[in-house]
Image (cartoon, rainbow over all chains, first blue to last red; front, side, top):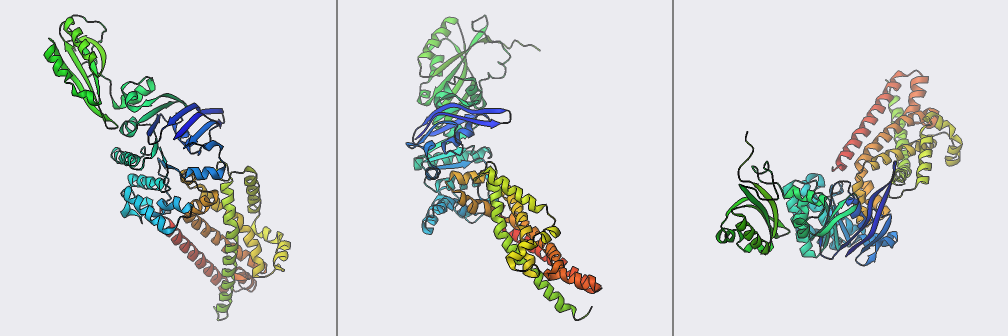
Length: 352
Length: 217
């Protein structure tokens, strides 16, 4: 649906040319929710603006729905933009127009007949839950309501693509959840391809199918959200994920030295990650029943990555080395990810 | 205070209102598009064009730097060419319009510059043409500000029209000078000043009220 090929964007600045984007290629399939995450200044906003050519790349080709839009004339481009809706961090609504007139705006640009406009606008306001606010002005609405108007307006021209530029960054966490839910519903209902730009991993985790992590103008890592979350490769990705999923040991263990080899009076700590249905096998109970071990659960969490359950446990295994080795070979055969953290002292060694 | 004063003042007031109102309408018809051009041809705007922007800017600054009294006299040949005479209410309107056009242009430009960039960007993303952006985004969004700014222009026109009156343009300025000053009629002088004050108050009040009504922010 969207194909970015070797995109490069260079800005002129007083201190010389600045490369905002360096040779980025990205393919986004029809119907996907594709997340692009990066810190501010990483080039993500520039990149999303290259999709509808609000920013023209210095070099590279942008293909949308099979058409090379970088080769289009101004008027062809305006036509193409009508099939790419966009919503913004600061909503960018007309302050002088009512909610109704804001949503009607794209339809009036093409001189659609009045009855058609009315039908479409009311249908969209119904969809975003603001039918009763049609005659109000944006200044009378809350942030979340303004973004709903933004979404309705973006959908008015019946686009095939929706670009979301930090669409929830100005909203509180609760409102963010409801806007993300709305975007997810629209994606499912209208089979829309959605591109989400954000600096929050939570947004990626809640609604995206795929993610690209952008750092200093290049893609550091990309792939299915589940894969990137469960097996991040790059330090920048790990940093983004660590905001949501802490890798710290529980309090009381953090002070203790972790060693790779067993030593007298030591326990083995391991981290287990369950994804989707693998949570069905009663691994812990089997560990306790089948091996002569003390099994302690030090930490547990359950998350969803776009509706796929994702559980994490840190457990301690205490017993003879032989039993620990047998238990480990059992665990490694299960459909879950096992990470050995290391051996720690059984007792808190820091005496104060 | 004498009975002859009332018709004199009413007539002069009529002339002032005529001069100011018509000058304002003509100056706005030229000045608003000028302001739109000044804004939209600037760097990173929808009709970016450095040459047009620089030339217009220079002309506007040049006209604005000439004091009105001098402008009025300096363009007498032009006034003759346009209205056939350099004396009278209609003739006075030529320098009034000429002085107001660049003023309005700058005021409109300033109002347009205050519109958040993102609103224009959103319209571009929806496939709006530059003309649609001007008529459906820039002007409606800036309207409360433009009204407030134009109110200031009207008020300065009232002052300038009094000056124009002094060289034979009629109106309240003419009356104040000919009767109040040259014929030693302080009553007419005072009455004229009072009428001018009231006119300015009314214009300011109406302008504020309209700007407030239009402002939905």
